[in-house]
Length: 154
Image 1 (cartoon, rainbow, N blue to C red):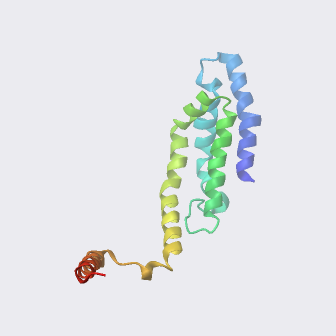
Image 2 (cartoon, one colour; image 1 turned 90 degrees about the vertical axis):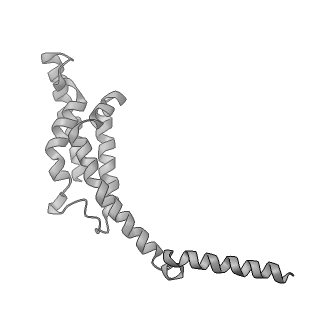
Image 3 (cartoon, rainbow, N blue to C red; image 1 turned 90 degrees about the horizontal axis):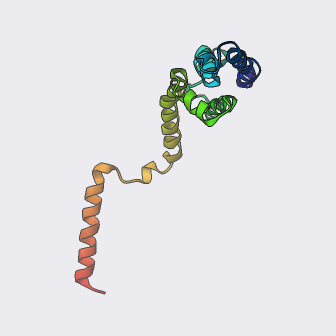
């Protein structure tokens, strides 16, 4: 799919460019670092497209495929970190603003998705639960009942 193509592009096009940059200007240049090329260049340019595949906002939390889209997006980041070649480069890529923005774009929809899933899961038991405003009254009634039972004895 689209996300696999992004990774293939990073592996087959971006990495060779970093090697050429290293040969041309030396290893001290940002252009020769995979974390710079993949994070600041590729992710920054691809971010809008990655978040709206097929013209639909990818992070729409009511989408029944939301969870799989989220997992695919996080897998993309993991694969791009692997393309960087080292743990240090992957950690450096995590500090790139476009990386942080990509992750941040998922935070609110992810919370909303889990709140909706929690509501759906607890919908059936909600009528059985004691409302918070009645909890104090119910506890007091239970204490009084236990006190009467102790006074009456076995």
